[in-house]
Length: 520
Image 1 (cartoon, rainbow, N blue to C red):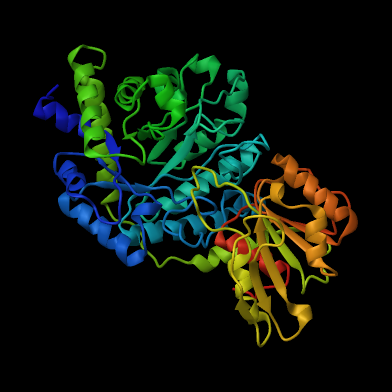
Image 2: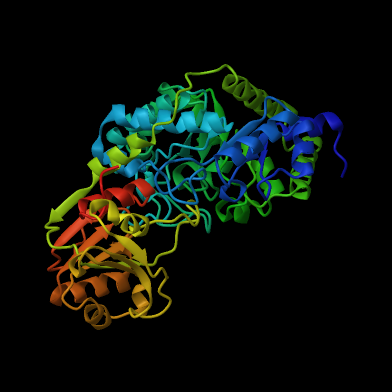
């Protein structure tokens, strides 16, 4: 069905699209000419700083007030540094440090990097209170499990980010931290009384509203006391009564990606989800990562049809588009642009490392990185100690690298080997799934050398826990946990290192504490 030109432009003004490739296709530029609010950039759109700056200039040439967004949380979720990992620790490490000045400065540095790249809307910070150790999607993206601490750091992050006139978008309202499911894959449920929600999950959102956050992102989660069977993204009680009425938020309500199954399974389609979200009080609709011109046009047609048959008041869409336009205007007012300071991130990551036990005698260790899937939010970003082991030569003369590979089978597969002046300085790394090796194989390969395991969220994996317990029972063992920490520790482990994240900065910090990398 053809949509009236005026309605089409109005509907486009509420949509954030996306496109494949490192240069914008013509349809993506044409939609901006026609009034599309903007585009979200993902790792596949980004090669290096020069390229991304050119890409944003190409997009802005179509219309100066375009919103260009991405998820730059620092830590495990990074788009600008997706090829090598972020130079900043994530929120969990910042929460452990509990230094509000450091949090604000790091987010100001992230804002400066985004502003210099031409990005004006950061889909960050994550301000969920991570109260469940087994949360599969938040974890180290959270400042912690204490609502008061999370609220304080959330406000500091928003303030630092927006000093560069990069709009902050705090997420995921009304709180994704108590879930044990991933809303990319299904509709999670947080079945708690409203008073508990106020005391726990909502405190950070009250704080970011007070800090002047320009945008807040919805969660595709079900909160029965408020939403019934629907996700929060499609709930007026959540987006209007609670967020605007009770918390006093006047900025832009942004949806999480409507292609996610937590939303699309309930709505039945992305166009129908767009109508439900607008009707419920959302202003800026993030379609998702897999977008083409046809999907945008079908979403516009769905909005137009809903206006036409009375399901969606045109005044509601006008209100949403006006808020989005005001956000774009805010980003053009200019802010304090300074040079990014990634060294702040490396220093903070090192300060956040927590060591239990002893790390003595690891110069000739066998490093076993336990292969694990990245979350959908993070994508395929390098993690671990590998890059820092290859630079171990900075700790002593004559170190070189030989033999780079990834284990595909048992412990006998290849790895990274760093050779020093003597055999005692050799560091060898394997990457292997816990299910594809045994304690006996690893101990045989290590010989007299200690074994250092590196993993993420080890407490969640029965095979990984069993392997570590078996090795530690008979062999000198150190564990580096780069995911969300838990109370679980392998019995008889010599040392346990917690980094509170798996970014490039976290990895380097761990390598330094182990004695394998020189200070940054």
